[in-house]
Length: 367
Image (cartoon, rainbow, N blue to C red; front, side):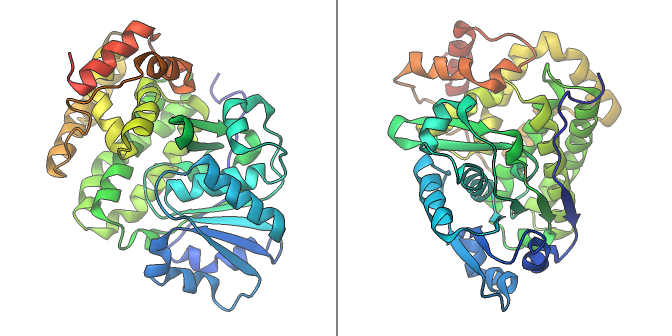
């Protein structure tokens, strides 16, 4: 099998400097009335006003920051039900896109978002078109049917997905990365790189997804550090690499790194990309016997040593392990969440409960 059994792609992708300024016109394909979901930085930079222009039929919704929560999705769903727009646009980082994706996807659904997070099989088809314009280069959410949400009341972080959640239009505009904080560039880039690697080695990978993952690995390995250091000529490269990574892992899934990262992030509120990076060494050692050929190929073909590359980035960006010396108090629940994760299920080596405990011990250095 070369391609996945079900291939889901955005209806249209526009990779162009300044593309976001024509968002309202582009979205008019679906109608004139829209809701634009964004973060605070879009207002501060003045880009929100540029995007809206003279339009009087586009309302805005500001995401207050942090991880997207099920309560935040419910609040936006209620707004969309009242406003009845023709489309929803998300301009921002992965949190903004995930929030808008879930709200647009569930706008007509009868239950709370928390219900669908626990009962993904009950998610109905989406009816509201979504336009996504990423303002960070990392999550790849603009190219997936996945929305990763946190339920703070239950200390639970889990994705929801549906084939109809795929954005209809994606705008990859390097202008949106201008002014992006260095720590955001670092965390998002690390996330993209590890997503590319995990989708490359996933047991559900196909030649199609592996080709995308391989391309993304090489491009991110060359572009992330210069972008972090302020060279904006690499912004478009990182946006496109993040996008194709999203296409890859949306079909191939990921691995135990993300299986660990979601419950760790929910408990310690650490940046997702950094969390993934801190899980890499332990996961590589665990998977080494089954991914040795892939690791050797990347090193031989591209001189790309996955572990050394990430460690070099962590050093250059002065990032430290936020989990060192920490303990997970609800260990059995944590292990259950790791094992229940679709990412863990895609890991190239089967993960047991004891494996999950040992991996956590190595990540937190509580060995």
